[in-house]
Length: 428
Ligand SMILES: O=P(O)(O)OC[C@H]1O[C@H](O)[C@H](O)[C@@H](O)[C@@H]1O
Image (tube, rainbow, N blue to C red; front, side):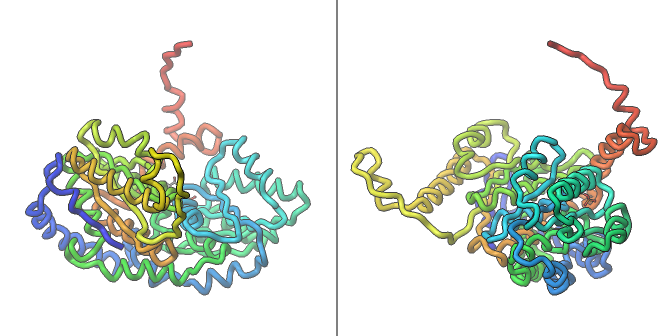
């Protein structure tokens, strides 16, 4: 993986090489804290050990009972869905992957109607085992299977913590289950049982995913110049401090679109604390060159744009045409066009002094994905250290969870009272 910071320097927020060199001293301290946390397997830091601690054989063996599935349906939300979805949507497989990570009833019904339930593995994932959306969706799926005459206990697989409703359910029905590793927050769990069970069912190479993560892990040192992940985290932090409050993550590959979604949770939930943070925006090249780019280049001076692309891909030629106006495309390929668009965007942002960072993978495969996911997690943890926030908590999210639960009669939460206090100003 390659991170090019050149276009982050000399731009409007005013970051230069000397500032980065000074920041590197703080990176050394932060790395010390991170290394000590990993060593002690402290909550959160333990996630950066996953390439070494995840047992790929145990995951493969747990899912091996499902023979020739047509599809895998992951029921989970947030960190319990996005890592698996990132891998599933990046890589080809004969086993289709579907995700129920929302409780929009019409959407859930449409998804279930489209699935061959008798040939689908249901992968229910919840670290806490109590998340209302996940548990509700699972009850709906179970019911749909029963109605279709499918024995759901034969087709369901659970990944959860030691306690909670989901664990109880797995025990009661003797469902195969994998443990969520200790000390690993959901949004950092892509390279654990949480993210990899779906990948195993789809037949992806778990060892290569973990190897990619291990390669990124081995690059961590006391200097941002040694590690692509730290380099990205340090520069993002420095730019945010200088006013780049928005980070537009813009992969130039359809296969990486979900990666931007995964990144958004990681970045927002980890770093948005105590009045600081950097708002992740999701974009896709080249599509969003024709929409959001106008704002990124000419709107408020508050953005970092992160451009991601694979260096190698399977290309497709653009057919020759006898139209004069299109002759410049003849003999070119879609890949060449996409690459030209990428470089034009980069240059256009630089010309307007909008900071941007280029991230390149060799290609989109298991190893490179593992490296990318790990590097972004390391970037997040480093940024959190530099900004002095509690990277591994999410109290603001929990507030809303309690309020919703209280409204449904699931407990006496004062957050629910605040919902009742709502003032209205309706215009019809
Ligand atoms: O895995 P679960 O316990 O079901 O949690 C799923 C999600 O719930 C909350 O929204 C948390 O803030 C997320 O970090 C978490 O990924």
